[in-house]
Image (tube, rainbow, N blue to C red; front, side, top):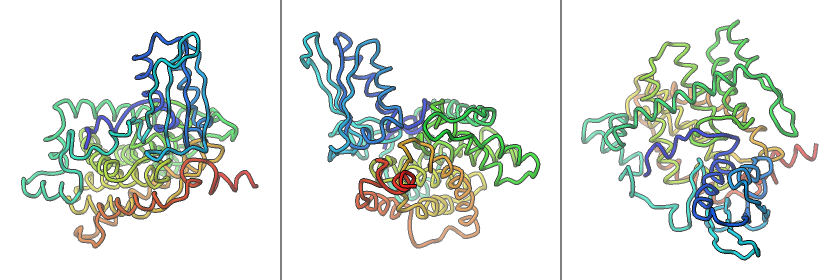
Length: 397
C-alpha cells in the first residue's frame, strides 16, 4: 500500500476523481509535451457523463493553457480498466498527433495507467489487510499509530499537521460563507445556520452537522479541501474530529494521530476495493469516509485495536450498496447532506463498538471485499453517471 500522503491531499473541489485527477494528468502530459501546438483530450465513461458538473473540462483547459484544448465527450464508452478514462493527445500545427497518453483517474485524486492500479504489497506498507495489520501490531506490541509511524517517512507527522490545518481552515471558511453554491441548483449554504443553532442549543450532533456541511459546501463550490478519502466525502472526517475537539478539548496532537488511524483504514479500502464513486458507487466514498472517521473516533476515545476495527467495520457495512447519483452531475445533492449524516453515523459506529469488547463476526476485510463485489455488480447508471437514482427522479419531477 502507498503512503498516507497519497491518500490525504489538499486541493480544489468539487471532485477528486473528476477534477483533481484530471488536473494531475494534464500537468504530467503538459510537462512532457510543452512544445505541442495544441491538445485534444477525450473523456470516457463517468468523466464524460458528469464532467460538466464536476468542472472536468474547465480544469483540463486551465491546466493546459495557454494552448488551445479540444475536449471530446464519449460517455457511452466505458473502459474496462476503470470508468474514469482519459486520452490526452499532443498536436502539431497541422493537427498531427505527436504524442498520446491514456490514463485513468481512479479516485482520491490518484491517476494510474492500466498496469499500475493494483500493485499490491509494493510501497510504503507491505501488509494490506486489517487482519494482518492487527496481527503485526500484537506480535510487536504496537498500536495502530505506531504501526503507521514505523512504516512512513520521518516527516509524516509534519505532513499530517499540514493536512489537519487545511481541514480546519475549510471548516472555518465554510462556516463564514453564505454565498449561493455555484451551479443550476442554486443551493443555499446551511452550515452557518446550523452553527448558530449549535451556539444556542450546545448539542454536539448539531455541531457535527455544521462542521461537515461547512467542508462539503466548500468542496461543492470548488474551494480548497482535503481528500478524506475523496473530495465528495471530504466533510465526514473533519466534521466529526473537529467537533469532538471543540466540544471536549482534545489536543491537536490527538487529532493528528487519529488522522493516522483514519488514514490506514482508508488505505486498506483503497487498496483492496475502491474509493471511486465511478467504480463502486458512493459506498466507496462516503462509506469509506465513515469507516475512517469511526476508527478515528474510537481511537480518540481510547478504544482497543479490536474496537477500532469494529467501529470501522460498522461504518462501512451500513453503507454497503449506496449509489452515486449526483443530481445534474454536481457534487451537491445528495452529496453534501450525506457527509453530515455519515459524520454522525461515524460517531454512532464508534460508540456502539466501544460498548463491546471488540468481538464480532464480520471483519472489516470481509466488508471491504463485499463492497468491492457490490460495486462490480452495481449498474453503471448508479455509479457517478447521473443517469439513475435521485439524478433521474429529480429530472422527472
